[in-house]
Image 1 (cartoon, rainbow, N blue to C red):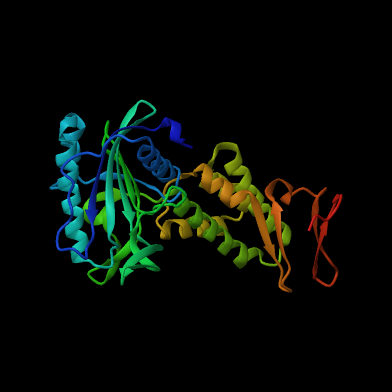
Image 2: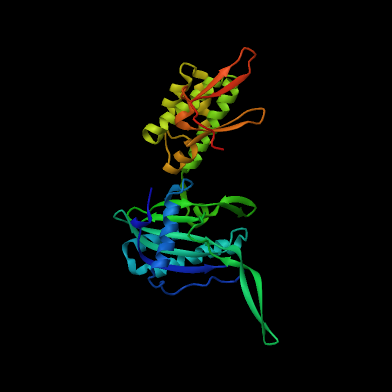
Length: 338
């Protein structure tokens, strides 16, 4: 996980990309150094780097103008302003032809972190908010509340479109959303602006594994509560040890000698585009996915169980009764808090 203290900002520039205007409002000079603004940008850079939806990408270098601009800047820092203007114009051209893409301010930041130089492209999409507005009528002030469209996300909010480029090797990390391009929903940042090859994010990889696991559990073990618990626990154990899921090992541990089920599980992963033998998960994905396990019964009861207690018979037990119904026994509770 990255922290704000690790981010050292050298250069900042902002261009206004409002598609209600016919042209972008281009800044011809850098922003003045200001602690609060640096903190604002550093905060969003850290949120982006720690986001489990971020994808590792690689430039397609053939006839790629953004790659050319960034490569030139990586070897000549005095090209920062020119590089930023060129990228802003490229992005505005895409946005103005595809009005589903939201207007924004584009902040471009040159920074260092952990002894490496990076370039951040932060697309600060406009949000709607309400502000006060004063009119003077007949020499009297009239205060009103009006809707203001061009508010930027604050430090506590998360931006959902950003690019971080490692200037030592030009590898990219991309956080993006799909918008309608020529009638189809597409990732326009990676496909049209950056023209880069993408991989699945940590969050996407985990979701594919979880959905494939849930599908197999429902199909083959829907009535076997203990087996379903074992599968969840085994997934947790694999991740807890290394922060990774070795898919072959996990399938062997869970499905053991059931070759057909294991084969179906692996095929389900491959159909969804997950072909890597090992899935590495971000700390955020692990925490969010395994902090608690949720159980929902057919009669409407819902339980959230801390993962460390989930498979501990001293704390919770699932009992299959002679009539086939299941009892959930919660043990060693000192008191009920709520």
